[in-house]
Image (cartoon, rainbow, N blue to C red; front, side, top):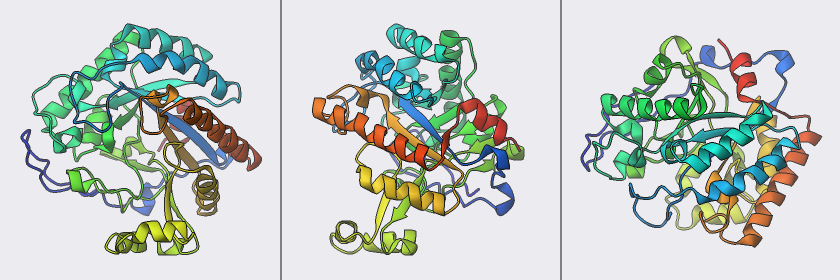
Length: 345
């Protein structure tokens, strides 16, 4: 995997980390009897103003009170969730109690999500580049992973095995750090997305198929699923990249049904587009569809995606329709344990 030198803890942005696509031998060979599955990983995090600069003081977790009811809606359909929790959640008594309650279903799980700006130790300045934890010096990235992992063990008595870097900020050292700490799955790569304008990673070369990465292939990388839809979708990333340089090009192509980049999330992704994206992904042979959303979206007013009660109703209807579509297609849910077992190298 391509690696570059991360920036210092100051405000300067170093060379961009552009992971190379996996070799064919590193792609996960899912067992035949595993079938085609989907998983839902929840970015379980503090509340903050998405329009304001990041702050270490933003650690509110009031939206967690809405989680049990939302969790029930999934579990009643036989769908386990993996909650990727960050430091404010892992150290908040209310959040810990809520998560202990939902984990009693015996199939859902917790993992780690690292927001470096609210995760000790606080040795770096808060800059756009430093919000991607993989940009930090390896020792500091390791210390932050350890602080969060330790907090999760203290709260739940179990070591986390799944990881996501906040803002998808994986770096050149991340896989080795995770493998040495017993992690088995990473889901930091967002297929077809590029965060290099802010100093973050560029995932335009990463597809949707899971692959083995890190030392001896110890980490199962499960990218967040994003596909291109529309009549011109075979133009894929090359066409999408070219349209960036055409005034309003991407919007015109999307509205005309020619080309859209669609991620599997209810957040800012219309239902009809996602249903088409599911069909495309399955047609391309993707064996595990990786869905996600942010836990603060479960209560109105905490994210741009769920601003009021009407948005929340639409959020749940989106999931009702998507889960019904997956069931109709015979795509079954997968728990974290099932993913680890089936994806073992």
